[in-house]
Length: 393
Ligand SMILES: Cc1ncc(COP(=O)(O)O)c(C=O)c1O
Image (cartoon, rainbow, N blue to C red; front, side, top):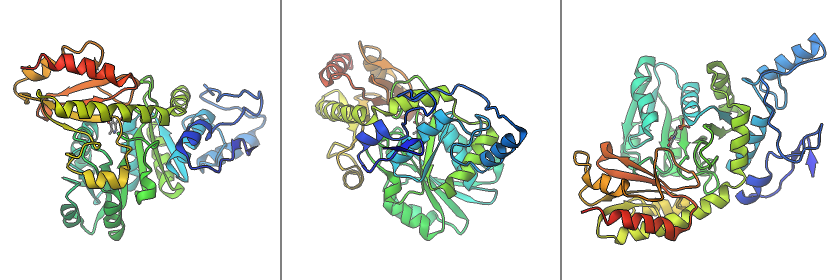
């Protein structure tokens, strides 16, 4: 069953891959669980051995270790697990989601290139595009990514990358990956999908035509809110230039964080399934509530991208939702505060994908709440939301 230091798995099931992929007994101690190789460097018997290791590491040869910025066995195990979940040739873990975003784009764009991005994206990614790309002479067109005709019209001869989130942060719009992949490939560009909001337990963007898929593994993949991390998956040909930049920029994952994230990944499918069930119930509750102006979750027939959601997500709607209490708007925080400040169990906090429900007020986005639903009993989340909504006038 264990060959070449790894289990050989014939299944496609995320529940099994999350548990077994990338795992193998440690060959020296037979430790059953993944060890944390908490070491900066690796030592050699001879100068020749060291020379061979440098050369192998420079080519990113699997299991050739020289220095942890270039490669580490704990991080390798995490990468093997995520690659299996994504159905990818390989994966590359990094120090934070933003490291995966920036290194993926910088590796595949150069001065004079054109990038098309969704206008609804995680704010940190938007700030990177607005603040940094112009200085590098990379032209960025930001547009509504669900307007496929608009995307097609924006493509130029120098368009090299289209970048979008499968489920957008925070408006929960659903990106039509197969349609965008076709447009990108017809233009000899690549499609990079940030799937942080849904996770590889539920959907595999590479199988829909995306060239690279990335995540802030800080979120659902880790699941416990105790480590920052990023991971990008795809072909070795597309990953190696990103690996090179992650090494050069020092965006490497720490072995301890890789271990925490690999541990979290083992329960990813279970957690996502439960959070989805809960989110379906919370979304239905909110939609009927008189103090709620609107709620957006792909489980609802009212979702503006419902047809695309059905085609791509197939019921794996995920644990993220957004809603607006009646009377909330960017200038008047009254209705927002009335809800958030009266929560008794759920926390007001940024981030997402943790075991507990997190509520994030976004006054600058028109007074909406981004909600990351946890794995608590659904009735308890609903009871907390219900009593907090009673305070909204
Ligand atoms: C969709 C998305 N992508 C990327 C990131 C960045 O991840 P990190 O905070 O780990 O750098 C986030 C963070 O919230 C996110 O929501």
